Image 1 (spheres, chains in turn yellow, blue):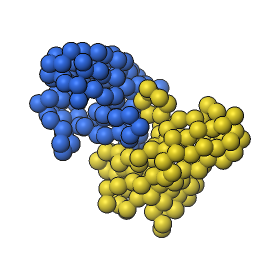
Image 2: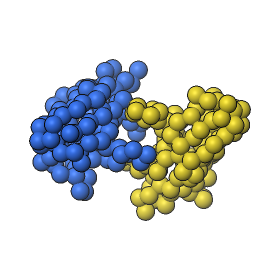
Image 3: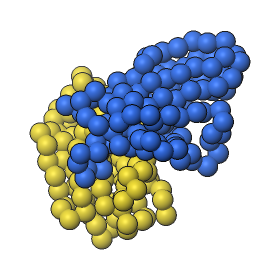
Length: 111
Length: 117
């Protein structure tokens, strides 16, 4: 119930391509879904977040697509660049503000 | 805005000694701070949640006597690893919530790498 399942575990995308990372959850009480980007040896940084009352949110090259009925959400990185190579974590939370984390996706953008 | 700092960024200590890690919110008041532990190539594992002025709430399996957390002010929380052993070697990360907004957003520090010899 508390899990957030993230896939794939790793992803290799050519420069300029679209990177897609998927997450699924069970607990319908979750009401905030952030994505974090983490570079090696650094703390996670908030990338973009969405609430379940919208189906899509876009910030620059990053888009979250949210499917409430399927309890799934995904991160799309358009025009992927080598600088986007990092580990990406999806998460979910509700009123107690504790983040429930996905397992992470290591993204490599090939030049 | 919303910057969280951690000090030190890395520390090496001998087995049996205690290590203190500081987490500061630089430009906001953090009513709630979280401490995480991360092993290589793994996700973040929540260790404890602390609210300013009250005792920390520890996650199941986390020894509260070993990992002492103090959240004495709205901008500072500390994690003390007491009698550290090699198995405590890890990457420790704190995060903080801005108490001035209703946002659930957590802002993360840069992490502290602990190596216990």
